[in-house]
Length: 146
Image 1: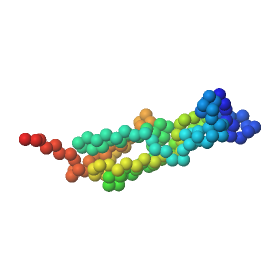
Image 2: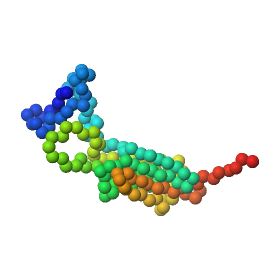
Image 3: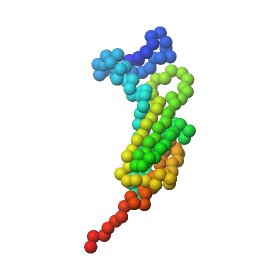
């Protein structure tokens, strides 16, 4: 396996190459392809969106993020979540990191209007859960077929 050293002469910056030698990658090309995965400037967290008759539930995967690092806004049918995840402190030589760090941004246009004053959010176990109740006029009405 090959290691890549961003600054020759410094052992601290030597890390494992994620692109194996047997693929025949040029080391500089492998380094170029590897960078976007390690340090994204802005990334979008994983999500899970569910709809019920009464509202929507949005779950965002935000491990390592505190509630102080999150900004959540609801305007009309638009949900916007922005924030930042720090890279954390590490000692020793970093051999590999696939963790996304930096700023994140998430926007969603909901298919129905919501009661903005009744929106609630909680952050637990690295998952941000946002509950968005539908407005009275937007609630689903089931019509029986006779």
